[in-house]
Image (cartoon, rainbow, N blue to C red; front, side):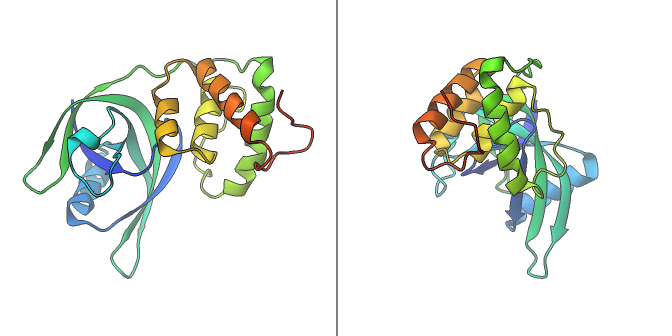
Length: 201
């Protein structure tokens, strides 16, 4: 399967929202094609924003679907996208118009898993934090009882380095992701805004 790639200094997660500003001609054309044909494109972490070398692209990315857009008077296109399936990048090339293209394999989505009792505090913290991002998450279907959904949302919202976010994206098991997030939040709860009665143990 071949798709257009949008290498960025950000990590998109399945089911998560992302706001983008697009002004380069190659990406404006990509967005136009996506809107006219419902084609998805891939967002993938570029470890060096100043380089277009595929060696700096991470191998795991996420398909993006446009859910809203607007164009400012300056010609810059504002996009709201939602993350779909994860994919594995197997090959990369640059098209004549300069657009990055990737040959990918779609990865199996994580199955819904009821959030275990030991992680309900994480869900409560997430629910509290999401109130601060209510506009961004308007089009996101919420499921605070699903282990995968809670883990992905925490990974995209918490102040985590990009390299660590990418690790959370690549983890195959939702409970492994939650355990690492719990460790991170326990170590950093002094500076994180935590709801009352939500001390992590």
